[in-house]
Image (cartoon, rainbow, N blue to C red; front, side, top):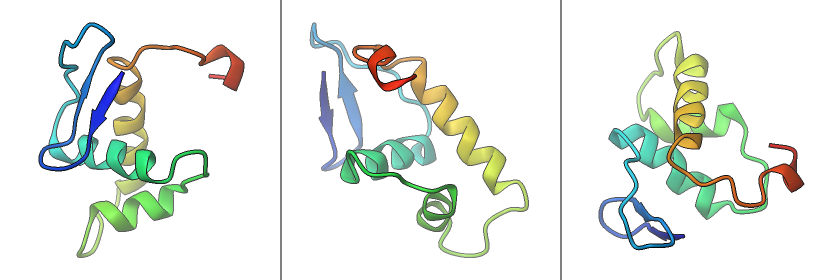
Length: 84
C-alpha cells in the first residue's frame, strides 16, 4: 500500500490500483492520520484541522463518518492485531 500526501492525497493498493478515497475532507482526515502515525488523534484535533472557520454543529458526526468510510477502501492488513 502506498500513500501520497503531496498534491492530491491518494492511495494505491498492493497491485498499484488507485483506491477511491472520496471527497477532499475525507482525504484530509487520512492525511492528518498518516502524518500522526502511531499517535492518537482526537475528534477535536480533526475538527480543528478540517474547518478553519466555525465548524458545523454536526462536526463530530461528519468526522466519524469520514473515518468510517475510509475503512472501506483500505485493506484490513493487520487490523485484527490492532483491535480493528
